[in-house]
Image (cartoon, helix red, strand yellow):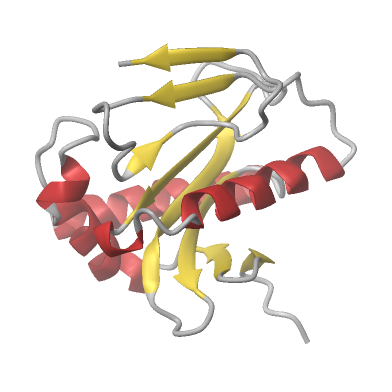
Length: 164
């Protein structure tokens, strides 16, 4: 029997629902200065705020089977790598989903963000629900790297907005 918490698997990833047991892994991810350099205010989070974040993210699964935040787990080892999300941004409808991710620094540069992103986009378009033509929103924190976090669609024919 399949694990109901698993959204999807790829060659190297398992994307599954968060649990409160993931709070320490999320705290470690968000406490890494390399990761925090490119996101939000750059300040580390507390364990309490990590728990609150997970509780908020779990609410997405109560409202929709399509949208949410998922823990990214390395399939071969079971190691926590970060997270992916596919959801409407605040103030936008279900027909305007956003794709995002944040990965631990040791997972950067291995194609894992692309692998997880493509899987989520494929899943989103395979549901039969109306989704708009993809628009790429790309955060470019430096000329050398996308860093730990981005919100993007890896569909090459899509219009693009770049935030540098």
